[in-house]
Figure 1: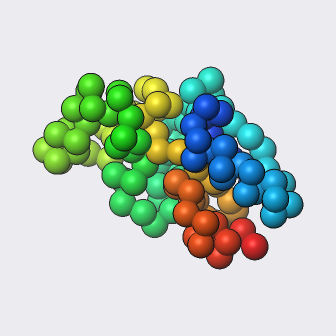
Figure 2: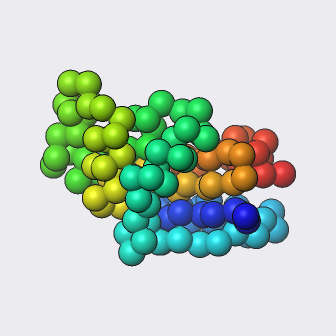
Length: 119
């Protein structure tokens, strides 16, 4: 399996991350997060592989996150399965970009983390 790059093309952080991947010569498969939203099963697998808290998978600065009051749902103790289902409803709820590799998942673009995992 190659590298999967999950992005929203209009997102400035995604554009920076994609430019960084291209500059480093990293090959990847591109996936539009809204047109091809991750499934609950994919999100569960990515979460397990990432080692990150589930909250890191939410786009906390997004309008939809605020409109749906997701923080309150998470604070109230939403089950992981419910969180995966919620994330799978709309790609705009998902933090991006996401890079999925053989044995790692990166959420958001933090250049030092990406360098360590990809170079």
